[in-house]
Image (cartoon, one colour):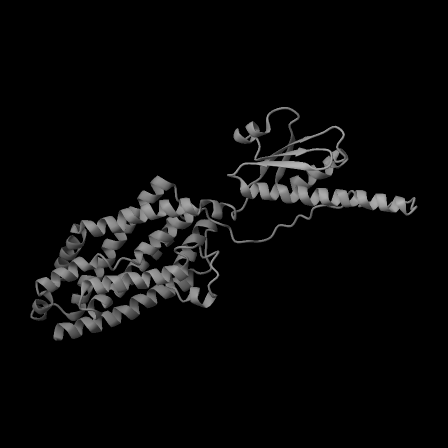
Length: 370
């Protein structure tokens, strides 16, 4: 009997075309929109790959003597400095022969950059600004000493770096497409309580709880007949949305098996919360609104809208959201291949399943008895 009821409930959920669109098509659309909107912001914060900068320098420029040191500094910062005495600067950038171009003149320089390479341009500008500032300071130092009659002029040692180079350990940044492509599958997994509305509406319309009371089904079986199809249908829908988004948007997930297990647990937690809410409120619409509001709040503090990397909320609020741990774990699977938050994420999800599973069962049993 429970297997038949589970099968019938799954059919009811899959027949709801509105929920199919909401759970499969909407995640893909939102991923595409937000990944485009935040593309520039997140691209500027990602790790920068080695790139080439072209330069041109006038024959009488005082900076000619410092070119070897400048090239050495650039190389230490993964920048390949190449001279282009001929050719149009804009065409070199448009053809992607160089990422940026520096025109070194008599006493200053002009930086040409592409609007799509803001991060690389900032690195180039920082190197040249710092380098030429120290060169100018060196020249001022020489002039001052000569004016003071100091014959043994002291210069900045040539073997000392004019630009400090230090590699800091930082968290790798995902692209906007990878970030939103991952977290919105997680966000919609927590919306998995919505498809259950089709079952609850049908049960209340046909007085199924009253009929179950005189059947041979136990109260536990009656609960599982809602819980199991709810998370199974949601998980299947999320897998379809997951596949579509990866094919269309080229999203890079990490640790596929572990990520799928976390998404499965998220759908189970959503199903447990959903059963509880549908038993708590007499109207289906109220249950859906409350459920979506709770999910929205968890996503708001957990990084589902603005990337959690940039959030300035108190860390206590962020860590109160289950979506924070889910989002961070899945994103770090993609960027690092592992996550230190995996254990906390699993604990949080399993706790939600157990707590709301018990509360939902108690409410359901009480309503059946009434």
